[in-house]
Length: 310
Length: 241
Image (cartoon, rainbow over all chains, first blue to last red; front, side):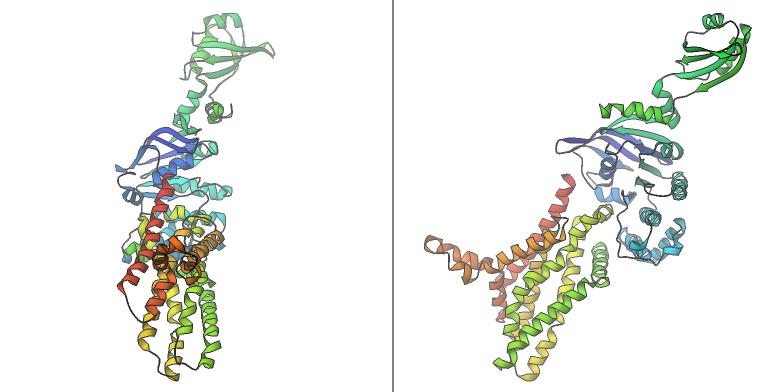
């Protein structure tokens, strides 16, 4: 469980993080989404105890970053952005070193390192120097390093950046797998990724949280209305008259063969397709096409982060 | 202590897995031996005095070369980000790194002992003086290394760390020498004892005489402890920034 309360961090005159609060529960993958420089990394660094905020606090399983920073770090696995590692060490030695530093009892270290090499599919690279590894393998070593002590909470800073599509899929699968029991906060600036991997998304812009919810909720929140487009043959005026209040005709054009293409905006997020169908039948008209379109996450993102460019 | 040991072993491996430690040892031994034997057979005295006389001047350059990478490299590659995300106290990391660098230096100094054996075989030197001088070398190196560690923790550029450390150590070395104290005249004469007390080389020569004075020991311990304490503080401060 990661709890963040009213975090504020200023670097000189720039406000990097501005009263941000959220929680990540165990068994939940939360995507931290925002344009570059929005404050994602800063927030994550604060949670890990790498820097301290001006005000506010963060807690991991009830341990506070101000009171028990070392205990917080014991409970966390952290993958920094750009995955800095000790390039001169080989993978086995590096993981063994991390295990020691992480306080894993000496006789369990070998087994733990073995296990991590398996989980992160590093078998072929175990004795290579880290400097010789490709981006994808480095990332996996970074993940292995973050997972070696089996932490209840994970903070992953852009774990998929710079990877090829296959590697991205692998990392996402691993994250989802781990997210079944751990609390995972994972940042990205790729919408699709957040959409596919996360149970919940936090959108941050200019240091402020501007949106929070499941990918589905966020999409609905964006426009506040759903668009229905239909092609209708019959008495259009009668249909328009009979439409319930939450519908509004936004667009109407002739669709050929006597059909009229209509676009209706609906302020109620629930699905009204059946109701619309029944309505067209009741006015004696015919329907060739009916579709319901929700705003995509992309729309939401652009909408919510628009303020930053102004 | 387990954490200190883990950091210590990792740092020591980085020194000995890369050419740094070997280059350091070989060059240090080559220069000291050459400078020593250049005059040893001419003077025909079984003493290592000329050897120990050059140690402070060599340490001025050599030790910052060992300490410069300790923190600057981590900051450069960003691996301190990883290091600090592990459940370690700042002092554990500082101490582990410092002791690893100190080991490189102590090993080098131990490798100069064949010189003492040669001198012992050729004549009958005063062993008390030699043992005292070796002890002085260790204390001197420990203090310079601590200064270098602190400077390294302030920058992400190893060259800057090296140059600034050399300047500071050079300042501390010459401050107690007649070269500087002779300029302290008139009312400034009161400063002379302080300048002499501050001088790195003065305490070294006093230990080298074979007299182990608690004042010299305290001076070196203070001079090693203060920069290390400041290193811990500078790392903590960088988290608040």
